Length: 377
Image (cartoon, rainbow, N blue to C red; front, side, top):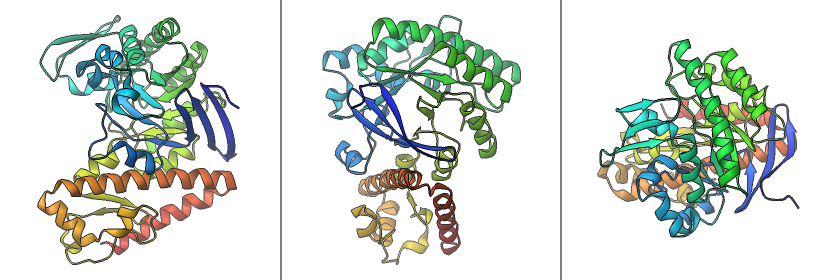
């Protein structure tokens, strides 16, 4: 039996990998998609639906939780899993991305980033050490190093500055983690924007420092998919085979499929629930816009062969009605339908890798999306 904080490769098929990541709160089957419960809740869904859909692990956000209700308060109430009643593995991001993307007033220094809270306007300082402390208080199974993420396109000098700062913060994050958070995992985050040499240097620097796993950050922030995938390949080629690889904030089903083909093990994205709240459904026929009037008289379910009850039971006409009427149930149903689709996709990917059939599965899946797009025009 694997001990906690251990990653086992189960099968490979080309560069695609399947594995088992053992954490103090349970085992994560990889490739894995982590639904995002930003502030300790999944928007529009109950945790039991997330679990029933097949998710082994979920994501919480350091930035939001440290501001409200507060990390010390959550710790006093038993930690994030107990607080939320999610009784499985949980990863928390470092908060750096939200600081960069949400706070208009921020100052980055060697020591920390200072920003104004979007809740009450108070000035807050977040350093690598404080980020690790917050994640320890939350009690997450996997913590992330503090990093600086720049939006693309960006000047090469700015990308290099942020990458080198992130490496220095990686060293500080590890020292703080080793002092404060025994028994859990810490992942490093490779930065470097869309510059190949910087991505490689970042990955090599992180491996030299040494982490339980390695993430790729700063992608899906404005660059085309082909650029994103090229950077994924550059980083993955410089990472050890015996540690999990996590592509942060990605993405569409096609992004997941293509990243798995390049050796990625873990993903997260708000897209399934956010798009569900806006009337979009992810299916094996591609993405379906339930706002479109063509669905008003369509008695068919989204997919009559789906294993998820809501996908095969509710008609497109009814879902269209809920979305157009602004009914909360519409957002709830489409959120769970989308999370279930993402989890089914990951389960099918794991099965295909185990069978040595991933390349054919990849083509069949993309062909199904293409046929559906044509049929729905």
